[in-house]
Image (cartoon, rainbow, N blue to C red; front, side, top):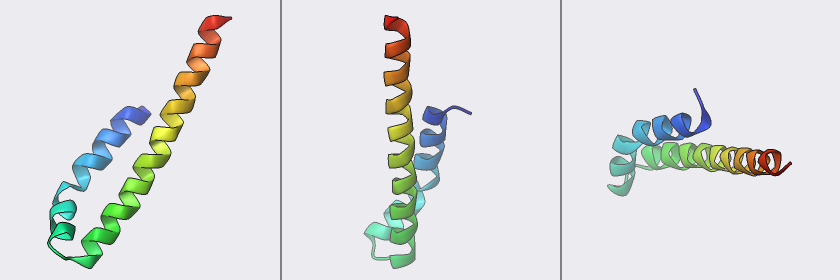
Length: 59
């Protein structure tokens, strides 16, 4: 599974917790924040992959 698919899966997995967190459920909010940190890290990985691909294509 590539990084973009992983991000999609993570987002899908927290939809219910997001709504619960907005409603005041602290544990759900914590799970959302942790998952969003994972999304951020994967996004950085994708960004680096795109930069590497660009550099490889330029040579």
